[in-house]
Image 1 (tube, rainbow, N blue to C red):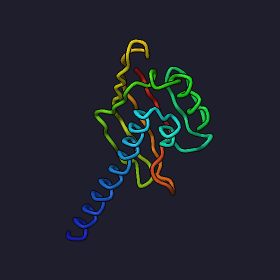
Image 2 (image 1 turned 180 degrees about the vertical axis):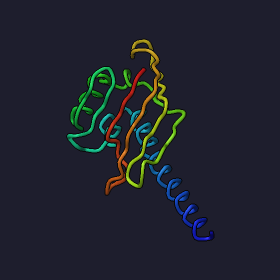
Image 3 (image 1 turned 135 degrees about the horizontal axis):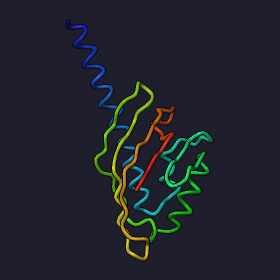
Image 4 (image 1 turned 60 degrees about the horizontal axis):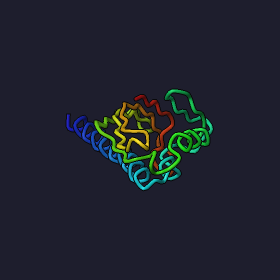
Length: 139
């Protein structure tokens, strides 16, 4: 019985630690966005030709995701101020996680006006930390 409780405690502590690391990636992305730094924002994604972003269209690969962001948010005016809300992290094993949440983008009318929507992300733990490998965002 004590062995089982120890395993349960270890699993709970592992999940909490990984959840905090994943949320740090999202916090770093918000900070980069709000500085107007698209390149740093996209560093939260795995630098791989196999990652995907699904929105109104599908973007594939790191370069495709970066190009999508640069096209849709060409400057700080169009980027506005970002925040993530209602973040839920569900571990899918030791190296994968599902993240659900809501984004809120505050922009002036000249920048495209306010926007918000939902996202689901799949992240993978790499040597250099957690990275997003799939992003499905809708507004």
